[in-house]
Length: 238
Image (cartoon, rainbow, N blue to C red; front, top):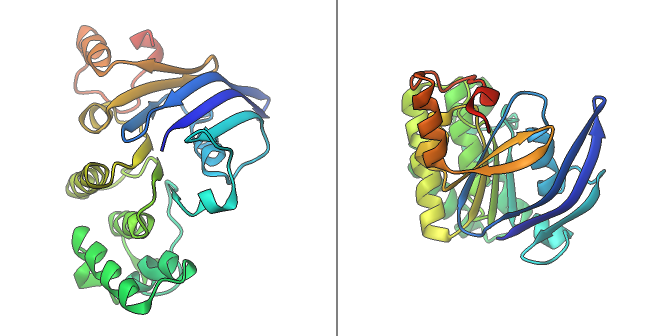
């Protein structure tokens, strides 16, 4: 799904969020980096259709947002909400909302339990899971209905490296198989470089595309290649 943003403006927390023009091409993994409070989550909420209180336009394959389009978008928050039900009930939930046949619901749920390696906790109550387990369930639930646009707000923050590896592998595989567009917010530049096709920095001036090679070079120039988390983006000159 191709996303076009034109003249976006929204005021929040005494700050003007503004993007004059930006296009996210279809079938690519786009990464957004930037300091806290610049509007990264706000942007995801706007693109997802959750937040409609803004001026300007967002086009999806050339068309405006509508409720039918909403069914093809997946938005995964940094701290995923778990229904007070089993893991498999959480994953099957979006399929029930779309009134798929029960056999298809069961089959797809089993596929995604296996994809995320969580078959062994399928009957556990989702609200008692660890942070990494919750993120796996959230990703399975967010991909089980095959969305065309996947929006993720720091999906690997504060989880163990093994889980990070699983989530990244699943996301990359999903994009390669389906051609979906993925938009990812991350503070981890190493992850952005590993996973994303295109990188953007969001700040008070708007959304600016930067090349991965440029980011790597500037980090190395700062002699801080190991300090990808909470890096001073302004020091990178982007």
